[in-house]
Length: 629
Image (cartoon, rainbow, N blue to C red):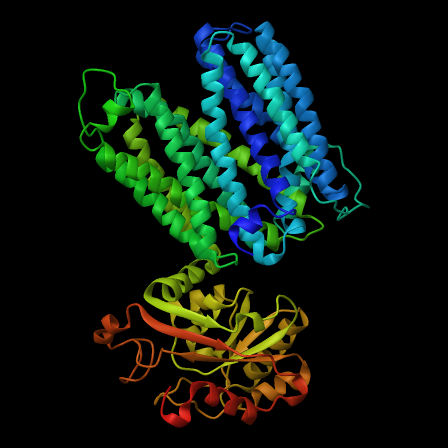
């Protein structure tokens, strides 16, 4: 299904537009309210304008702390389409109350409406993110998340701009009131088109104790360590973004001497950049959760924010600049490029993490995991505000804050990739399979979407396993000689890939038995295993004799066997064509952008599997009789 057909498909467009109009409405309401308070100097309980604006953010985020646990439970207990319809109907009621607040110019009513908006978003959040895996098949989850993120950030931008424009007009309160009610009604109508779904955990008993239930869902999200680390990664993104968005107005006013239109330009660049990054991320993912793009995103975020620090104050201006005046100054295009690049990399960072959480969490607990994510996101944003206040109190300048963000983001990235090596080795897979080599894959449809299987391939180089991993959408556990684990760098990556170490019968019979036990357990868990039946890397480019281990595996676990042929790596830096691999650096230039092919053929039934027959099949695929690889 192409992108256009997918976007307009019955399963996707209702949730996309339901989310889009909701995000647009939230930001239209909030920005109009902030401008109204700022320019009319409204006060409540003796608070000043700056304090009132700060309270707006706190009021909106408070329900995420208080009610996310209950929202997550409800989204698991009830059909998600009904939950979403309820929240959109609630939005219509809240926006009607907000309209009363605008027309009466009552700050108290507006604050109550803002709190209720936060409550509605809290209820909506777990349902909207956990519903995608129920609506879409596995091949379209990444595309769905990318488009939703794209739409969300565009809606944030459009809503912020429209809210500012409408409230600034004559009769602004009237116009904004009409707009928020109409937008909420459109969102409700879109939600009625959602596909009917069944509850995933109808027997779940709701725990209304806010503290206990909050602690419980956080513990649920920690069941799978990689999922919890991914939640922390998403929360870090919101920490990072909250600081950036908070310092943009100060950066523009004090460092660049720009007016409000330049602030709007920065917000537009950030929103559009995340939207672009989300879409490009989906294109680069090739219909899989490509965790290798997360390091790309984090590295890019660090480098672009570091360059903003390096630029410092690029020019001096005695007059306040609008957008055109700003763009005419020296060095401003570097700033624009950094902001756009920073936000594009943010899209690369966030989309795979959201998708990973959705796919790796238990479907019966998915909404509660999303609710835990919302709680931690809110917590990190509060911590970001506290840190920012502390930095300003310590006399740290805006440009120095860019340096602080660079250091913090680098440290967080190192931590994530150390505790979950899967991110790093997927990053290497992307570099090898998409950048250094031109990877061509044929027969990918022969890899089942679920269920156990054994993949077999010829052994040409030290990166055969990375080529297979970069090609196959599903996670694969590789069986490799234990000697690979002795190299510290390889050992780190192989642990992330959950490699099963193996030894020969004469070398270590106990390790050999442990390997076959691990293979069997993996297949019983409906996962896939990949082995290289030759048992060693070829030294002459020809396929070595297959060892009988594959027959032992299939005898114990009669599952399909899928033969694969790797072509194009003989003669590479990672092969033994020129002697010891990884030592002939002179061959590297000849390998850059070289063509590598993985040819996959239909699965063999377990009852016909024999090592000698599989060897003959691989040799036929490689055309070895004609002297080719």
